[in-house]
Length: 519
Image (cartoon, helix red, strand yellow):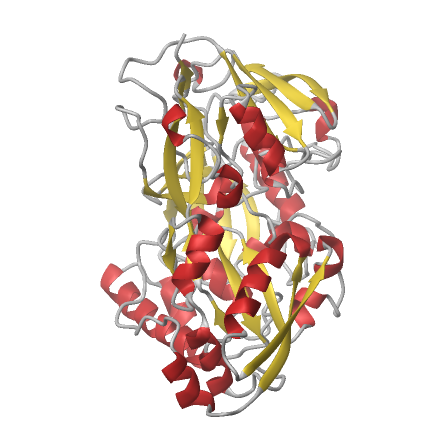
């Protein structure tokens, strides 16, 4: 059974604007918990209790293959599982896969499938289910956001006894991380896309007791779950809310037990009394990409791009957007979630001297095109650039459907300057392949660097940490100097948990393994 991938463009909004805490990586924790797992006290886990959670309404259709919203992803991950998880130390760890190995030529990854696992309808999990799941993701007519994660990398998926062989087009040493990608939850071989709400099938720790579109969903513990002894909760009730502000109000009123799994803007949580909750902070690998088309004037001039990068007050952006919790960016894709990051780069900060040195009295006019979701961030950049006599900047805010529309004229890929949030990815190579690689499907800057492409390929094929560091140093320098994309900051996301809730931090999904409630 062989599936050939193509560089077909999946649904834009789903693939790029998916802001999901399922891919968060632990950066720092600052809360009142004594045991470090979220919640108060340091006692042993207690079995029982119903956790009350809330998400922004994921919409009418829930399907693991295509779900795009953070809330929808939380719902799906409560019932269905992926092959691999990413732990708080940003390491790939087993889930439905138990182990993996790579061939001598680094082109075939053999993944052992966990034995004795059953779907919640009683049928056993087999390698054929894994193969069929990836066939659906990679099919030429697939609408799964996950398709883009494997484009140009994965060429075939075949059952091999109790294992599955993933054959690659090129060496990719971080491949296990791709198996933790969103929309890769394993479903039965005979699953029909679009029918998940008829069965809510999965191998996960909970099953669906009731579901009401637009209102909420109720889960009960799956007694046949392969790791049931580490699931302490009896169930979960998840309410659907119209927006993040409604979630915050629900926490304040005691209607739900925590804000987690979906990032909430700092201005919405600023009114919360942090002393009433366990609060911790996580840093995602995702970021806002301020992208400049290098093939359109005025951005054909690298000095213009560099001047804009030097004009921005990155600390002020963190303060305004993230409530002072985050790290300044330096115009590379390597955020604090990644263990290997560029060294030796001059950190950019707001500098009128640098702007004048690069532009003199040159006048630069352009429009930042963005989605309405990210309008406030674009307006902040506009305000900062207006402080300099060199820049005249307007903002074009569009609906998400318009900004991420399908086709060759999609604004987020064709406008001269765009602002787009890129969701967290388990491997920096995914960011590179999407954003910078020559002719990449989502290369909104229309940038090309054969040397950077070569270095990225070498990074993918390399496992030696010292060589990887050297490559990242070189790649970071290219991104920093050529600056087709400005990355001003990496903002932290806070979790607010009631004192009775103990919820371990899990960077790739909301994982209820080990979660418990004080009784």
